[in-house]
Length: 142
Image 1 (cartoon, rainbow, N blue to C red):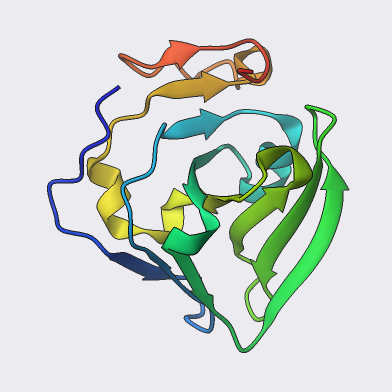
Image 2 (cartoon, helix red, strand yellow):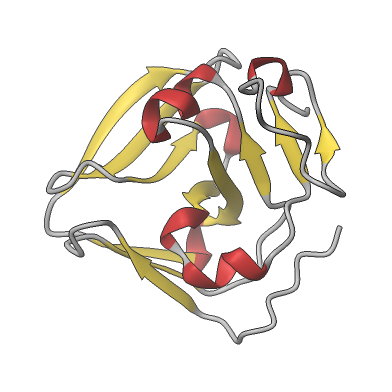
């Protein structure tokens, strides 16, 4: 898996309204695209993300909101989103331990990072082709 950023870290970004900022201080991998029903609902299509050590991520938030959901995988996700614009920011889960899953759409440098895996391809919209070089998983990779 090649997940090297050509630009130096840290990578910083924000939500749509700019009230919630995020910084990632380490290269995290793998870079994943998810096609599950929850990601469809959150983004209207798909979400790309990486799981990073919690210690490598800072979220600055005057209006961050939280809610828990049961994901298609069966895991309970503790979701974080901007209370101003509703943008998805990140989530944690007991299954992930000391990691936080960060929505890479908020981080401009991640557009340089190849996608390593696609999850829930069984739910992928018909017009979307497999991402070149990405491993395909019908559900979630264990």
